[in-house]
Amino acid sequence: MNVIWYDTLDSTNSEALRHLQDFPGGTVLVAREQTAGRGQRGNTWFSEPGKNLTFSIVLKFGQDGVPDLAAKDVMWLTYLTSYTLALFLRSFGVGCDIKWPNDIYVQKHKICGMLIENTLKGENLDAAVIGIGLNINQREFPQLAMATSLVRCYGKETDLETCLQKFLRIFEEEFPLIFDERERAALFRGYSHQLYGKDRNCRYYDCLRDKEYWGILQGVEPDGRLCIWDLESEGKPMRYYWFKEVSFVL
Image 1: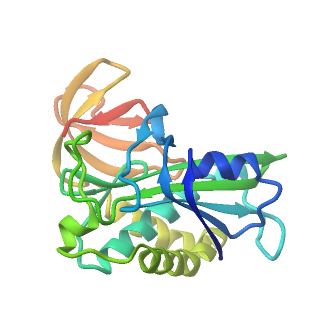
Image 2: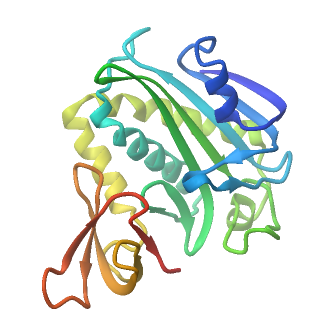
């Protein structure tokens, strides 16, 4: 992959999208300081300059030897990236979970988030920009009480460039899995088994019903919906959710 380092950017995803036609697939944009990082749900990603990894991976499909990926299969990018981030952290001995759909948590503390943005070409993806904010050497999070970092979990600081290269190696090794039906099954199992709250009694907030309840996360459906067994329901206990329809009560 071709890695481009910037001293300061508003957002690596925004920069990638602004110049998407100019960046070949496999380009990685990294900012030492990100002034307007973007996360899911329109949230802002706060990061202390020079302490963490804030970067975006540009992927292009149907060219340069990369197969097409159907738009209906876009969730495989989420499964792939979440799974490889978990593998990266576990390589340091840091146990972590994937909080559906793609945040990475160490116990109840967020260590990584991502934002994936796509462009389409007919029924296929044309390009994808995978934005990742991974806390590495930041020790204090005054604006984010529930955040953590690799240094707080691992016990010592690590070089940002070394961490990035290590993650990209893992990502490149796993990337072909999303194009092979048989390999997808293994990737999906790896993602599903590491879901935060899986097979445990947890508290959830159902945004559709405006109600909190106790439930057990069963897993993810092939179409990407989260499946939760409602322990407080007397009728239909299995509930299915799309993104933004349910949240964890931490």
